[in-house]
Amino acid sequence: MDLLSKRIHLPFSKRSVSLSYFLVHSAYWILITGFFIYEKRYLIQKASLPYFVACVSVRILLLILIAYLNLHYFLPRYLLRKRYAAYITAVVLSVAGYLAAQSLFDYYLYGYVIGPMRNSDLLETLSYNFFSTLWYLGLMLALKLSIDWYGQQLVIQRIAVEKLNAEVDFLRAQINPHFLFNALNNLYGLTLKKSDDAPEVVLKLSGLMEYMLYESDEEYIPLEKELDYLHNYLELEQLRSDSAADIRITINGSPGQCSIPPFLILPLLENAVKHGLSRGGTGAFLHLEITIDTVLTVKLINSRPGPATGTRRGGIGLQNLRKRLELLYPGRHSLETSALPDSYITLLKILL
Image 1 (cartoon, one colour):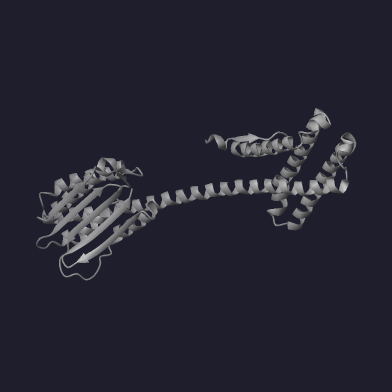
Image 2 (spheres, rainbow, N blue to C red):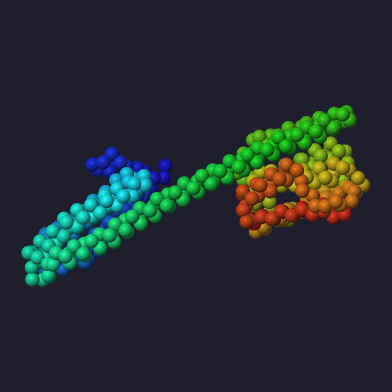
């Protein structure tokens, strides 16, 4: 538990507050007390030290009483329940009580103890105490609202992060059955051909499933692991299709120094295989170039059989990728796809 979140039981009350609440409010009253000590320091010489201590103590204790009566009783009991008339009445009565007590004390102190030093006009004393009370109550209320607002923002932020993580986990969970569906289709094609490569495909698929189940649970993984996975995936595809396609993966930079969410590049490769390699054709190719710098750049060019009919949109995998990028890298990524007469081009950039 965070130290500042530790609960402290208030004396003479069943309520408890957080340590952060206690420290902030303590600092506030220490500042107010320091201000009154500085303002009333002349009383040490004019009326003696005991009267000075009494003057400061009475004012601070009365302010504390009226402030917390408002914060912990009037606000929740009346204002937050929209009983505005009752709240205003309670505040007015509490301020009137404070004014009566404080003004009588000031009238006695300045009118009889100090005497000639100051005019002890009761109306002036009431006016001074009234406006000063409203000022300190306003400061206390502003402090209360500021702390509550900050606490609400922390809760909202935590909920937003939890929701983000839940959405990302959901999208990641969709990737595994999507990939498994494609892999089983590949294996099914090999068994129909009675290919001798089927056992090797099963072995590679087992390795890929091990990665999916045990090594990709982290929020971020080294790019090297993702690249090993992509290599195995492409080898499995070549075994299935038994093609002589030109497949190249070029890495610029150090993948060991870069971490990405698992299965972030796989949907691009799946899309390229689906719309390019799986359709065969003369001169089929797939070129993947990854550049690691302050920006991670993934450029994928693959062959496209037949005439171009527009920009490729992709299926579930690519749609999920777009959603994941929006959640994981909001405002820090771009994903563009385009079609040329004989090829598709996909360009992904992520600001690291």
